Length: 462
Image 1 (cartoon, helix red, strand yellow):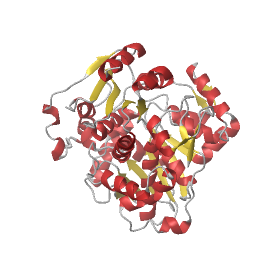
Image 2 (image 1 turned 45 degrees about the vertical axis):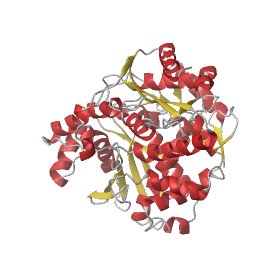
Image 3 (image 1 turned 90 degrees about the horizontal axis):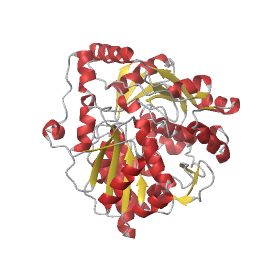
Image 4 (image 1 turned 120 degrees about the horizontal axis):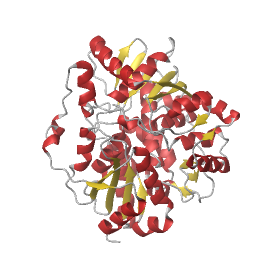
């Protein structure tokens, strides 16, 4: 299995190397040259398997010969051993035809654990074989950073630097990053938005001299292995509702477009997905683009669903690559236009996007209303991101097709919003009850590339 860049200028890489480098050297994102397709029989055979067994079968074709099947099975099995629910991603019926897929039973209470717990073990395996040392850099709007730190903390041949927007994430999200005691972990609070964090991260990767000197590797959702791990729960949830003999739809709270793009890949692998619905909060650039064809970032408006406070959704580039017929030159031109203020999607590409994705929007008042009404009617507490998805899921439901809405984070990660809506303060799980008492270690940095690079070089001894 080989992986190519969305911008068409970087050399093709195998799975292991594409995972380790994250971002292609031409600035593009890696995708498999061909997506393996599962037969109806293979999808039906997933029914009744453990999550780990299903994950192994679904991901193995993408790994190719880079990792032996026995080793890969052990990696997958260990990745999910610490999850707090035997089903790993259980379904819970919320209403007639509406299901919640709970993705918050991992160690940091968010869907990012499905990818990070796997990728941490994959990195450890690969680096152990090669003896290399790397510097992992990531940008987070809240959950990626804590999941990455949890996965890589204490590893011998890895340094971890996570950029997050100072003052723009929840206290629980921040403390999950800043209370790690391991010396290889560095939480950096950047004075700016998540888009600023992501831009500085990409700047570092595009500085090839710096990238090579510190052994830079990325674990944001720009990393293909991240998305691959997320493909699995589309299959397992659909199989539990009758796939391949029954269609299903999904609504996905969306910020950086990685989670919903994993559903796109599942569909290309043969899963009969009726609708993939992008659910946006008030920072609704993806909804606006799918509706109008215009992708023009505006100022980020802080919200109660901070992981979605994004105007430059990196993984949308992958969707554009397919919408433009896998033309890397077209994608590179669009990304150049984005740097100058935005772009207009061509009519043909917009039609292709609309064939794959629907969309909806949920404002702040509506988010509070959905959290309150869902609790009153069902007793369920929803995090704000999940509430955005639930509101859009109901709007896009079809009577004959079950709709699965992704519950992306535990409500206890956002106690303020949940308590405002319901007068209930959701408790943290036992292993995190003392989070508010732990000492924080954090470095505040400016929105300045040279400052961030100097800090990384100093702390890695380069």
